[in-house]
Image 1 (cartoon, one colour):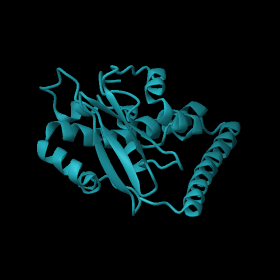
Image 2: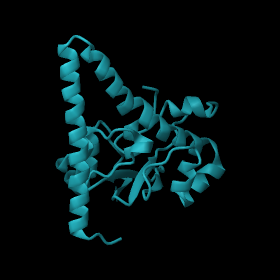
Image 3: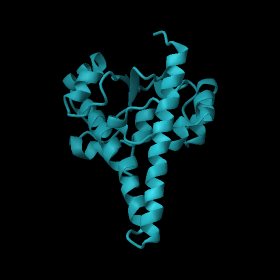
Length: 209
């Protein structure tokens, strides 16, 4: 897929600016409300934390749990992730296409975005700060094994790592491997095993956090 560089740079900066403007407004509002004694800063932090780690990623976690539990849904996700995810009620802005990539015993998938901060908000919530850092993006491509080790994810040498570069048009969702010993779990319980980072590829699905 070719990108016209000017457009893409413009998109990237526009996107980043809008995001940081929003953050700046939120921070300014927090300061005013806190100074007037109208709100406890910890309460705001709790709300932001909920969006970053609970509401957004829980959507993606449900997609993963359904893929683990339902072979037909898994096949649909592999064939047309945008439609399969939309069927559960999670859609992004128009024009965003999702692609699911599946971890296997042989292959681990890692998602980066080398050109801009492309990130499927509707499925994963707010992006982690490091995801947008140029150092993460460039190093993940050059030394993915080393980057993953810094996240505490040490993969066997023989396991292949595939890097997927998200763009404004196409965003990737990693479907982690289903943890052993979860055969009896329902989708609701399974979804608690899936973190945001597991759906980017910087962690594995595992014990509920």
